[in-house]
Image (tube, rainbow, N blue to C red; front, top):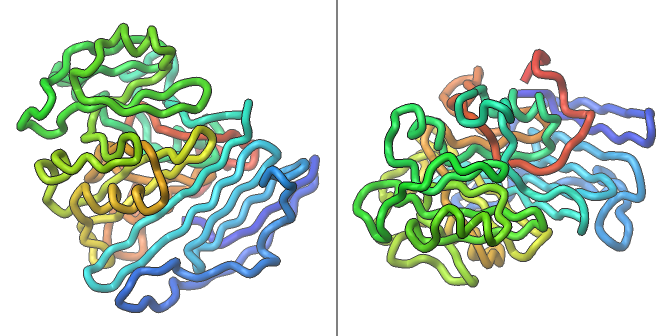
Length: 327
């Protein structure tokens, strides 16, 4: 992981401040791992963005990471709970109208699901500001297993899915992403692949279950699927232009993980009208400015999450390090 650092640029000017530290002592209830001082952040305009330039803040000690530009605002907070042991990340994302919106970012756009790499390297290759892992569709594609309805950049990779309420996991519910920033969730067999294209969706992910639709939790699915404790990733939308990416660490000392309902309830608390569960386990990760924030193993040295064909991300910045730089 990188040292804590703050970087702000205007044009070609760049300033960096480095600091080292450990996480703050946590109480029995969960709260953000440290709060930033007002001086940590630049002044934003009335729209909530910078007038020009970019700002990047790495606060490993505080459990706080921030990015701002004239079209994008991102804040990632790490939360630590002692009993039961949980560590999770909540990324709030605001996109300016007409700017970049969450979409699937391939390791190799021409090869699609056939080409894989570590998520942080995909983020670096594409200079992605904030991203989480995907639906792991590339494994089902490789194994010729039932994939669900999977679309990437307008190309249908799979049309075969499961019936709603199937006993198998994942249920292959879908998350549809649209170029105007809309996110919609559906039951596995609610629409056909061509229906998504007719609606204008560019990417469709198949995993699930969907967690929230029209502001209501998917209570039946949450009761049925995924009681085991593991790493989790979920994405949600309050409204077009305002999103949440969340990642829960699991199966390590500081975080035992949890069931699917844990992040579903967090998304509900944040006001999401739509939310969706992505692949968990060793696939699950969150990447900020090319750096994997979450821990995958115990000990000082971290490990990258599983290789994948693409990531769900938003934002582009030349300040993201190159693929070969330390992560």
